Image (cartoon, rainbow, N blue to C red; front, side, top):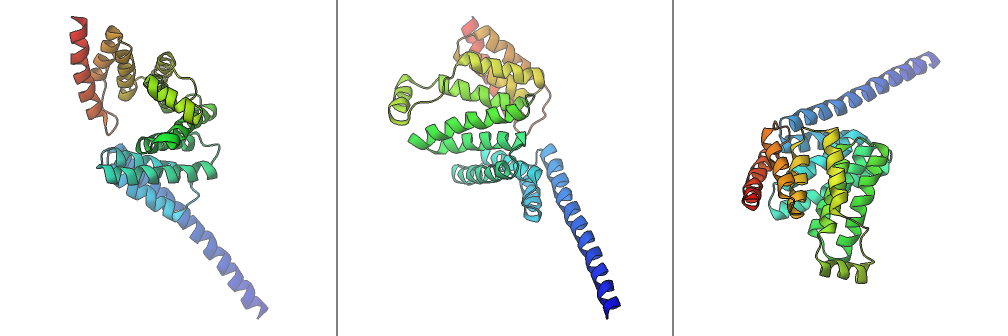
Length: 258
């Protein structure tokens, strides 16, 4: 009887070992499928694969932050109702990623991005609070990974948007909600330039730097960035749209130079 119990115990241990190995491999398979879909600009395919990965292991940091990213990617091109659902889902998953993986720079980056998207859907006090959180999470991502070009991009966008709020909105935010942290176009330019230094072929870095110069009426500098966009290879799912926007903005800038 004792011998039988020992044999059954060994069999159980072996079964559990291989079951855990199989589960881990399955999670990695889903992540690999999601990575391939993302590379192929198949955002819905990536969303499905990363969701399956999270379903298989809800504590996997990579699966979580990539699922949050996929929700944002899908939401960006959806109608308003579907967009809202994906942005809030992305925020929820990103918060889970940060909670489970507080030292993961990409988790903090995706939370910054997701919160920024959710802020677009909100108003008043919550928008101000979320805006502050965008900056905090982007700074945390940079603290963990100083060479994270997308975190620099987020901080640049944050500075530009806050710096260019109307005077009335700034007063409103200050009186009712304690205001927003300091921001400037110059700080935005600094972060965009750093993002480009780290990843010089990322189209959206150049497009957004050009937009910042355009807002500052620095037409020649804006022209240089929009022209640069035209020369860069498409590497992201929305790069075609970015190229089209840069071309339209270049036309407007050229009129200012003549």
